[in-house]
Image (cartoon, rainbow, N blue to C red; front, side, top):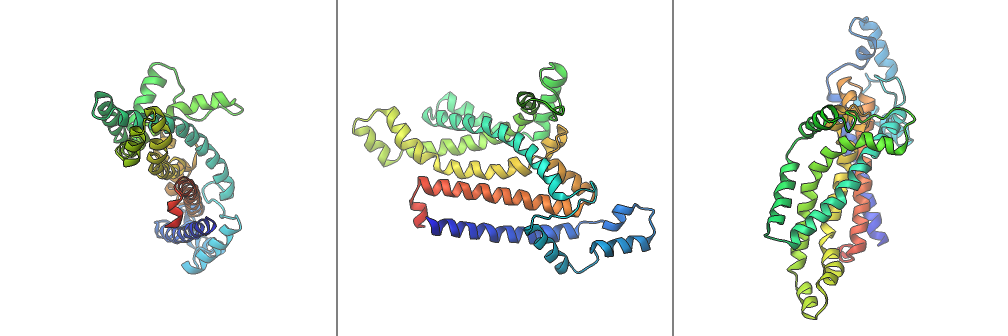
Length: 314
């Protein structure tokens, strides 16, 4: 098990290194001049060149990358151009906000999707199965900005049940913050429900048709006990990897939802950084999201190998 863990950590570090290279090259290729962006369009060119020299943005890319990655390894992601604050400080508060929204959506969608997939598999071929499968897939293809706008118009503007923004007033209690996050969490639940429920259904159907399930039933074991002990344990293994892969999306892929609901999370922060050509903030944000995604996948692999020891032998 220790060799498996070390191998997975090594692969995660290699992946993060490759991502850092691609992120840095991508930010350098974006149009815009850092010095011009800071001083404005009417600044003297000599002043712009002097600022670029002081910031080091006119140096070769390899030198800039080395300085950036060595500082990042020490916890220093640079200074935001548009916000005039350290990138780590901005990402810290934004990441906390995104985690709140992601946690609420996660707590809602995972049990709901697992229950829907299990019920659909146990009632395979019935109207219930078709309703869950078709309804879930239909909700998945609806873009977040469409479902989000509909939710705002109906529940915030029309009925007035929930606030139309995700940002709670300063000093709000935990339940008040959750009330503000319910509406933006629903589009995320709609997008993820169909995918997770369908994978769960497929796993349960395959486990129900397996030889060990038929053998357990022929031995006279109660069907409910067979489903709990044999079917679900084997059927939910692929679902673990699927759920973990969605964590990265829930942390850094909420651009549309966070912009639509005026929520200062990582997604909106990256969107603002791209708009303002804030290269340090954009590169640091993408690197942090990639690291969070790798940690989530590593934990999923560890859980998967613990539930299925044959994976470790591979």
